[in-house]
Every structure is written in C-alpha cells, then in structure tokens.
Length: 147
Image (cartoon, rainbow, N blue to C red; front, top):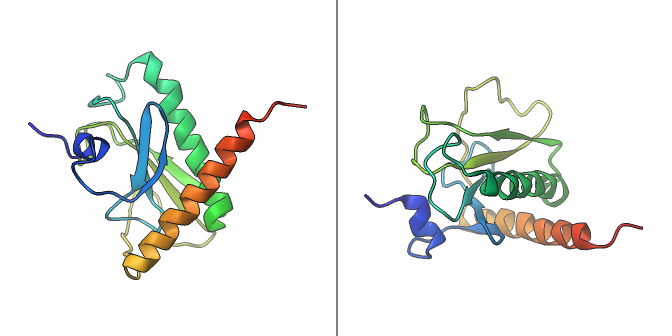
C-alpha cells in the first residue's frame, strides 16, 4: 500500500515544502484550516504517535516548534494551533503534526475546523515562501552560540 506522505518525502508527489531537516519534512496542507496550515512528517514511515520511535520524537516536535515560531515571524500570526490526530481523523496513516497559524477572533472554535482556500496559487506560494524564509532564519539563529 502506498503512502501519500512517503511519496511526497521521496519527491514522487509535489508539495509546497516549507522546511526540511535531516529527519523531517514540512509542507503546506492542501486543505488548510487557515493559509499557512503546515504538516510536519518524519521522513521515515511511522503510522501513529504510539509507534513513533524515541529517536524521532525530538526531531519531529522540534521541527513543529520551529514552524510554530516561523508562522509568528513569517505570517505575523498571533499564535498557533498544534495537533496530532492519532488513528481517528488521521486522513493519512503516517504520523503528522498540524501546525496552524492563529489570529485572535479568527473564528476557530474547539475542534470544528472550517477549511479556507488559498486565494490562488500565487497566494499559496507567497505563504510557503514566508514560512520557509522564517524557518531558515530561526534555524540559523538557534545554531548561533549562546553568549
């Protein structure tokens, strides 16, 4: 059985990549809650959080944290919603962390996720590039020695 996310990681399917690290890939969700909604996946196929090996936990959550910060910087979001569906409501059986930019009074209530489309492909690309630039900048600053 083929996995959509493994196909994206392998470059067999197109995705709007915003970040790539040694162990993970992050790309825009094709059906975003809000523009900038990103999925962070381990490059290695793992179905669920329960099955995630310890060696991938820190890279996956570290990259999710980086993307949450990148959305605040790159998209001027007020904050983020970070979630993992585990089996129930997991549309692709490959663990993925949703990182969704939030703004005060954005209309998101509880777990009801109304989906919003990008205005057009140019808007999607603009959002992709803003997050990617911010993630790169934040990753570089994290590598700088602490004074």
